[in-house]
Length: 469
Ligand code: TYD
Ligand code: MG
Image (cartoon, rainbow, N blue to C red):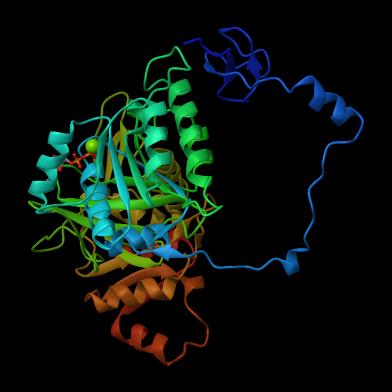
């Protein structure tokens, strides 16, 4: 088969070059050119038509006249997955799901496909990583006896596309996009060019419903690199409608599915699952999952009320400050390291607590990843607690963003966070003053009566309160 012409595209700026070069001639970035299929040049007729202004134009519709139909969603049978998807799958949508190997991507999708198939939707599971027998083994383990899900063990794009066109399933899973390759490109499967081209082709196919044809919801499984980003170019994230990350500590049984991008729902929604002997089970009330059980308070531990999408979640933040060497280390698990460096500087400058010659380790318990700045106050309190060797009170929570000037800024939905903490039996809280209403209504007063709430405006105030305990 004749190879189509290839070109080289810069993964940074998108500029193209006919040859591979070490440095992009457009933006100057190094080592960013990747092979891609060349777009066929427009034919001579089209070009001259364009020049004469004869090309057909599109019709305009006023925004107010367009019917705003809410997208129809089909529940997957896994409520926790539906929550991250924004209520269920949308016809013609493309979902990319990433995560470390062994985290449970194939398990989750097989469970979802089986539930959809049983609900009467035609599905298709394309496996490139495992053989049909291996998939069947997993299905048996999941207790999916006589599952009707059709399985295609195939990695060649053209054959996958032909099957999809023939079967037109309502939902198809490609496990994984990195194993799929097209003969149009010379590069190896899993290379940036292959992943991009295959994903683009499949996406076009998924969207090409209509005319009595059913459009297909496509779920692409993607691998993540060591740095935790999806392997392949970032454009993969731009091509699809929804990007989900499957994360969690492989040593614990809890797994989180998080929406990073969602054209059909809220981002930062999170679904919580537990990996059991018989597959993934949804955890509908996870708020107290990420607390470790200390018989009595220990130094270096502070419970944070974080918000995952719409749900408040209590997570224990642990810190260990210990004598370091000439080059003290700052390590964080589940929290941003740059943010940690900033918080240590604030602690030094505004509260007079120096850890410059100490190793500082912080950890969010249970393998959760916390990106919101409202974690700042809890991180600072855990660090100072470890540094001073003094535990915070029992059943204590905190949240709030800390600024460079030492101010404590409000967190979104502060009262909801307090309410959740009160519900779980927490009794003392340090919160941004701006989160408390001047004139509390009855419901708020109930929460404030149930807890000893200390409103603070600056980090010094927080430290003064803590030192007095
Ligand atoms: P898998 O879905 O194969 O992960 P991925 O596709 O993300 O690589 O999950 C594999 C892990 O899950 C493996 O370590 C075994 C475990 N597992 C269970 O604990 N229970 C089960 O019922 C199944 C099917 C897998
Ligand atoms: Mg897998």
